[in-house]
Image (cartoon, rainbow, N blue to C red; front, side):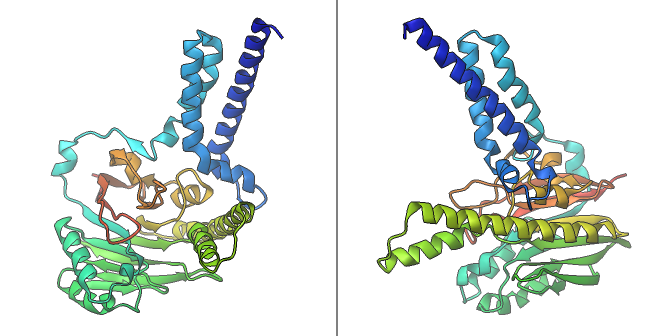
Length: 353
């Protein structure tokens, strides 16, 4: 095979790869529109979107360098269609002096990870101090467990948050405004759950959902593999991959059912809805789409920078604050605290004038 033939073959293969990347990316962009049950592979492509976007950008540069402008249209069009998705994890942001001048309700959502098992109450007090510094009005905590001294010591929260409501399975909402109603929402065959409270803010009722959806199962699979390895049992790579995939698939299916249940509950609310919590899922997934519904993603509205809320090696956004369209987001950000494997998310919300 001559040099020219090799070049043509290589260009043809690169064109095929570029075309496949476009197909996979578009499939991922719409993967969250279908129930994961029966569409697992399609739903999984949502999680690969960041890598697919990077690959499309590389191919765009490659075709431009090769001066193949007509072939560069494939990755270019794909990247342009990815802009709404990119907006869920990155925003340039801008200073809005009018928003800064408006008064609003400050929300926080934080998976406190059982206070890392700390029992002296030190972490609980540090978190309370941070809530005060951020001037939080309503705080939604997940994994707020009873077995540590932190929960007992958190009675001191009452000085700053006079009102509180506890859900089942380690959920709590603290509020500086009166809580006039509440409901616990249990999910089947899991320790995860959700709850909502209705809060009276200057004679206006708001419904706040505090949500903790099914975990991914990845950490538990890795932990089990580590335990077997420590006992001298050899863990095959394929077995570990299959275990991770199986756990993740089961978690994804469980989360989708939980999200469907909550979406139905939200539609029945007569009060404006604010959703806070740890969804254990990424933007554009089925869970994200169901939980969002016709509400507004606070980060897309008034956030800035690169948004990820998990502290581990995986820089992913899995903690959110959404709100109804009748409300207006004024600010949205995270604080990189080290008390948990999650970062707390803060948002200030006002009623539209």
